Length: 286
Image (tube, rainbow, N blue to C red; front, side, top):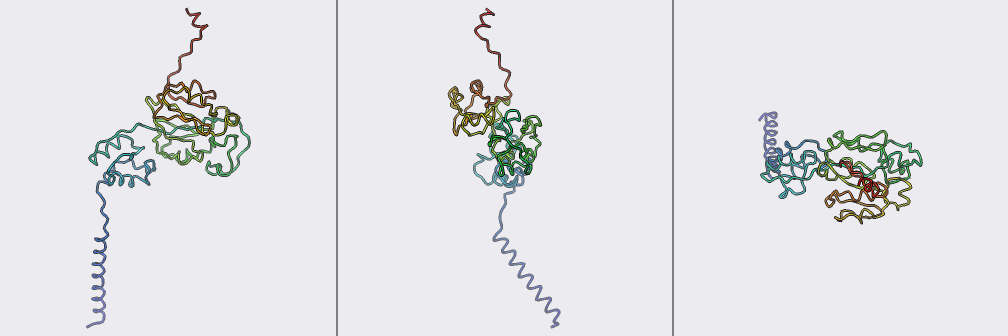
């Protein structure tokens, strides 16, 4: 037999044997992927922001399909409408979640937090937090170098040149949590948007004792406990010299705002308060 022909036949036989081995191996180790994953992924916004707690929309779609219980699975960017579409694909009943957004728990503006030094290092909050405490006496406050703004994919954050603090655009914020993860001081929190977008929260993270905190920032929480005492709904707790308001328990009565001696508690989007009528004015009216 011709040597060349023998070589060709041998290679052909070897190729067939290898092809059979590859086919058998592929069938043995084949991973089945539910076709609904593609449908769910198509229904998602495709932001891949990680706000859902997964690496990306594909991973989140896989969790929606494989998990027996959808509780805890929520796409903050798409919101309730997206989750309703996902539930329809899965043949489940959609459970609506209260809308949320990011809030900044710091109100140490330039005029309220005196500068004690000048930071001239790299212009990122992450590096500034590692190398120094910033350029004010408050080591818990905003560093003002816009790491949060830089990571926001939705243009929902911008720096206010007057206050030196980031401002959240409520109409654009998707609660993806990128700012929460980016802030080295942990100043951002995802909270319930509240009825008519009304919220009450402590805009401070300073855990120093009262006198020290007040010296470093005029509107720092001093942990006096007045807000906790006046709250009738057990929505406020004091820990580490700092007050915290539970958004689930808070009934938005605003009594805590009135008694806070440093104005550390913020009320957003409420109607203006009616002026208090003193006894002398009441007597004059009558």
